[in-house]
Amino acid sequence: MINLHCKLLIVTFDEVNILQEIKHRVEDYLGCDVVNIKNSSYPKARMRFIQLNAADFLPLLGSLKNDYDFVLGIVKADLYLPHLNFVLGLAHPQESVCIISLARLRSSDEEQYIDRAVKEAIHELGHLFGLEHCSNPKCVMRFSNMVAETDYKKDKYCDKCLNLLKK
Ligand SMILES: [Zn+2]
Ligand SMILES: [Zn+2]
Image (cartoon, rainbow, N blue to C red; front, top):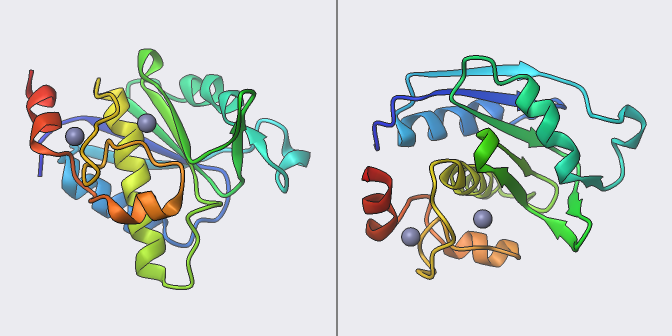
């Protein structure tokens, strides 16, 4: 546990069956004081079944921040950015908001699905804490473009990243 003592808001846009598992694991690892969940609607409701621009979520998440320190959005839809075919997540450290997509993390093994979601959440939150991508392939801050890379890394920051967090 890292003892960040932060107030984290998790924003969902769909019914996420593994939401409580994600919440508890993120909460336990980071040592947040408060973790609350709020449900919102997609920026453009009719687009819920196709790929969505990850950047469209950031202002919405920012508007829900209020007195929370950080906001984590979780969507089922696949996300992209104008210059990338897809992204597993996106963070905006200046605004303290980030989002992850579950679309490419699915697995018939529910534990694996939860693991992947937790790793991507801790990764994007790491950006909000000021961490950048790490070259250690086992570190959760290693950039992953494929789920195989997500599966390979751990759900924790490496020692180097942890030291940067403490500064
Ligand atoms: Zn990243
Ligand atoms: Zn690292």
